[in-house]
Each structure stands twice: as C-alpha cells, then as structure tokens.
Amino acid sequence: SDLPEKKMVFKGLVANEEDMNKLMLTPRIYYPLPGGSALITFEKAEVAQRIIELKEHIVELSCWEELEDLDQCRIQVQAAPLDILLPSALEIRLTQSSRTILVSDLPSLDIAEETLLDKLELFFSKTKNGGSEVESREFLDDSGQVVLTFAQDGVAELLIERGYIQVPIVGGKYKVKISPRMNGDITNLQLQPSRCPRTVLLSGIPDVLAEESMKDTLEIHFQKASRGGGEVDALAYVPAGRTGVAVLVEDTQG
Figure 1 (tube, rainbow, N blue to C red):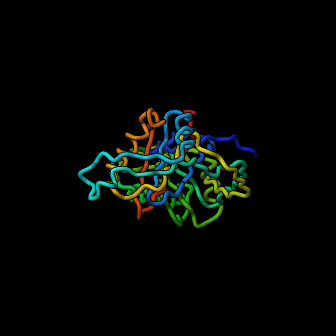
Figure 2 (figure 1 turned 180 degrees about the vertical axis):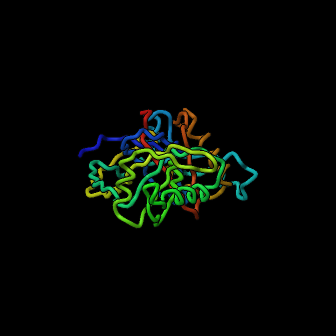
Figure 3 (figure 1 turned 120 degrees about the vertical axis):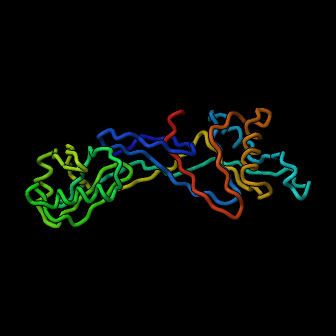
C-alpha cells in the first residue's frame, strides 16, 4: 500500500514512543557522515534554504589559542541539501509462531532479568500449568516483555487461548498476559528520494579545532542573521579522519 510522504529532520536524540497496541511504522534513517562534515538543522526551513543557496561559507574561528598557524583563522565550508531515500510503499507478511508466546504485563520487581526468566521457565515448563519444555527464553529490553519458545507444537496455542495466567514470582502471584509472537517479513519495499527541508549538510571542514570548539564555532556562525543564518535546532560534527552516523526521524515541526 502507498505510504504518505514524510519530511525528515536530524534531531540528535530519539525519544521512545509508548506502546499504542497497534502497528506503527515510524521512519528512522541512519545516514553515514564522513569526516570533515556536519549536519545542522535550523528551526525554519527558509533559513536552511538560504544557507544552501549561498553554497560557500567563510567561517571565522574564535578559538585562536588552539591554532598553530594564524593563517588558519578562517575556514571555507560547503553547504548542500540533505537528500535521503524514504519508503513510499511497503508490504509485510505476518506469520504467527506455532511454538512461541509473548509474556507481557510483567510486574516491576527488583530482581535480575535472569531470575525473572528462570521463574517464568520453571512455571511454563510444567504440564500442570499448561506448559511444556521451554526451548529458549528471551527478555526484550525495549518493551519489558519475555519471549518463550517451547520444544513441542500446540502448547503455545493453548496458552494463548487462556489469555491471562497467574504466575508465582518471588513470593507473590501476578497476572501476566499471554499473546502470540508475530514474525514479519518484508515482501515489497519501494523507495523514493526526499529532501530534509530544515537540515543542511556541511562539508570540507578542516581539522583545526577541538571537536567541541568546532561545533560551537559552526553554531555561532550559522546562527547569525548577517551570515544568512538563524536559530539552530541541532548540530552534529564529525572531525576529519573519523566517521559518524546520524539518526533522522520524522519532522513533525514542518
């Protein structure tokens, strides 16, 4: 099916979305940054457009004490738009695992993950509890849920039909939810080019200042209206000789 067009922006940090009990596809693009480059996101798209149109920028360096050669008091950097590929159409085939269950609504207890996994395996490995031999177990850090895989077919299906089960854990009994574990395979993925309207890619940055000093210098320069700049929302800089990866998420601002 067709996906709506998305505007993307580099924000530096990504906040985890709460579980909404529904399938949500949120674009998250990993963009490689070569050494001597920077990504800068402005609060307004028109500022980014001005910076891109100017192409060449002369940046004055303010940290004189770090420079061995005073002729390096200015640097020239190039500004270009940030173009990425975004999914425009996506098809996923979902299949339910016949031997695996997803255990959720687990209590928040001050115990180690391995202890919790041991308690769950002990409980669900007993036939009187509707279980069977547990082949593997896994704690999902991002959701706080546990995946249990049984050695026999049919066990998972019967547990899923029950929905909720009382499980003894460290002296108490807790009602946990049993759900099917779904596996997804992408059967069709189509991409289309997209431009980040508020983000600019800077290149050609020489390694003449310490990393933090260069970040501050770039941000100060590109915040000046007299230089065609404006308020900076986020900035990432990768010194020459190194590489980095920027994370881009959906731009909900513009």
